[in-house]
Length: 161
Length: 470
Image (cartoon, rainbow over all chains, first blue to last red; front, side, top):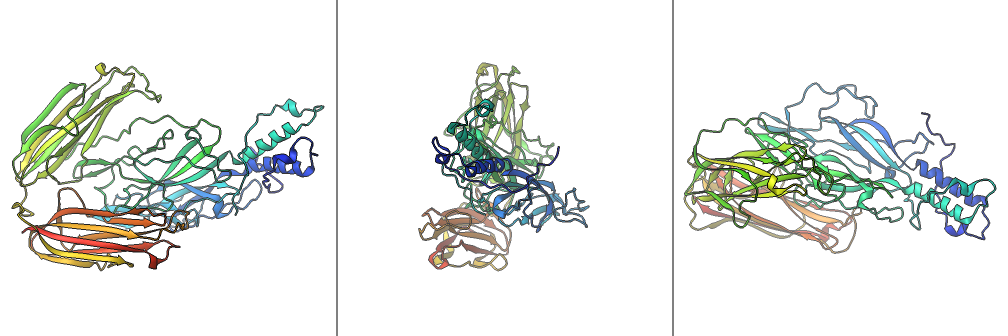
């Protein structure tokens, strides 16, 4: 399937019903607004893969492949899946698309996991806290790898943290 | 980026192609329908952040910021990410936008996790089931915190029916229980009614004095595999919940739940359940009791369903001698903190504030109250919620202490917000010390969210430590 391609970024117009009421001339302005609204509806909301991330990384905002629209932070909310409780292995690049290698060891049996895992939608900062049980003690670190998607909604201001 | 704003909620019209065919007049009716459908397409589907939730909370339906459309339950499906396996610390408000504080402890290493985590789309009810494995026993509770989003789709019937109960993985065989002498037992087969009640439980045994015991329970339900469905479209089931307890505070020798549930359904699925718990009775003795709650979903025939229950109570040994157990006669206040109108944190985890130092073994109570003050100004924090000021009290001891009866050393929180809401906190618990010196300490953490003025907010702290016996 080919990628949808728009030659320009469509806008949205809250066209008043009175503009296209009976007895009114149907103008090119009204038709263009309706056309843009239809296009806007087609591209407004989508899920965009952002790659793999670890603690302390910042998930950037995506560019829409349909029309090159650059999303703002307020238009993005990040959902993620746990890829691993372990830290990435050497060579990991934040946002890489392929599943990264992971550390070959961990301090002990999982204990508090996740111990406070979140992506701050306002900044994109990834915070991972993981704890292990080792020799009768809780060992705390920032291990973990998440696979991240951006749920994007144009012309919106999310209220997430 | 600005927020899309519509002056009215758009509708959708399945306009026939014939209405805009060649040779037909293009009417205002047709144009309006095209316009509305285009708007509808722009706002129909979206993800809306709902906040952080814990077990038992209900996620509400959202209101769309575009045009203030109020979504029906059937138009919402909830997705959740696991923020933590642990329970929230005191002060969490269901749906709060910021990551909540997390309990500072858990019963043991994770075992069955997640052990049946779900949000019922039909009701918004959050069910979290987590288990830990320590000392050869699986401890099941409802720990957990999730970050929730609603996937909204207007004009849809997308909700799933309510799920059946979670089905945790059965625990592996428990490590051998210390040898003991059976002192009481309940063995009941083919029961088809609840036994006892919360106000009138069934006595298993009355223990005269201090001692160390184990209580082991197994339950099994029987339901005909007729595949009949309940009102939610799931296989109808019968379940039995056993609750046990005592007339006086017991000292659990490991974290444990006071109830457990077994069930079976009309699809032939059977979930047995049980527990094996060690505890100590107090010097004054206690009556150990239980009751069951038996439920059979329609259209199952109650007469065709039943459950088996087995409870065995063993006495393992006399109770340990720490702390010393002479019955309390009177209490003496040995330490107190009374601090009104505080506007800063007191002490730190690394450098806490000492309340009192005691010598040798003894039995004590610690009582505290927390109260916050914030101006009722209605100001909002950066997440659009009423700004709040909150204080967390942590306390502990320089040497190991034994918590007696119910309670723990979890930090406690209190808060007040700019909407006039106030959440006080107060508690009392008993503990015992061993030989040597033991210093009881505390520290507080005080947070005032912007734009509240720190000088306008404060908290009151009172701590009293009484010695009950030496």
